[in-house]
Image (cartoon, rainbow, N blue to C red; front, side, top):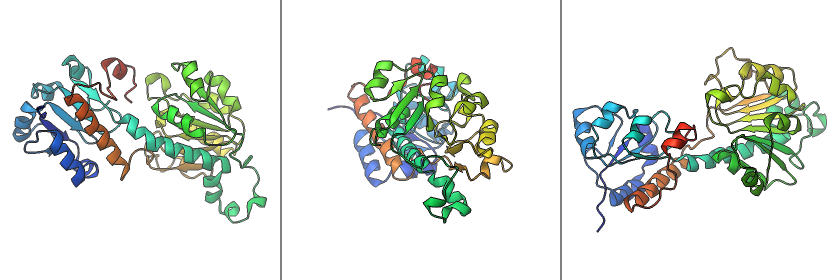
Length: 339
């Protein structure tokens, strides 16, 4: 009979409540040896350190403290960190990999609602629905009174996807449901054949920009991607283009975007901003041509259960010494692919 590993759940109290309903607690108990406490939001008290000393697997999520060298030294049996959320950048560093601890992420599962939100944003952008709704003089006048918004259509449109990431790929897949849509991808690291198999065309960002009706951002947050879309890039977009950002706020120069939207040339749907939240004086808060949502594209509510199930499935694979489905290796972590 296979020995059940010693598992400790590490996350904030609100995260634990969101991740583990009665059924998922029961499944965890079937898969793991659980001590007291089953769950903690800290790793420094004497009580938790006693649990940590025998723990082989951590199930982590939002609110988990960083796995510092001191905390890892208190966990000599630790062999795996299974993250029930997306990015592990605030959780692990080189020390984890130096100790041979395996790390997995729920980023693939978290990509699903982000891609769904993005598809909805693209469809709404085609009709300019958020911006018309925010302009009382246009919202109640009937479609015949609308001007200055471009072609209110989702047929025969061109969508530019910046970043063929796990979310970017899902967005490309979902776009196949729209009629006669041309999908262009900009990503210096993407394989042209893989992009083509997904139904899109890979090209340089500067060549993509003048051709799109919607620009959707899915690049990682790295030093070289800060303000990837700045004043020069925004000027290349056609009139009435909608810029959608569900990735990281730092990808766009907010001042340059505000200027283009204030001019009446561009529109924007932003689920992430730089900074986040936007300061009260930001013009992006006041423009009818800009829709800002409070970082809700990722997993929330019942969607969080998908992340828990993913981590528990990884626990099954780890215990059985099977390949892990979403492992973050030292190489991929260093390249920013865990972000």
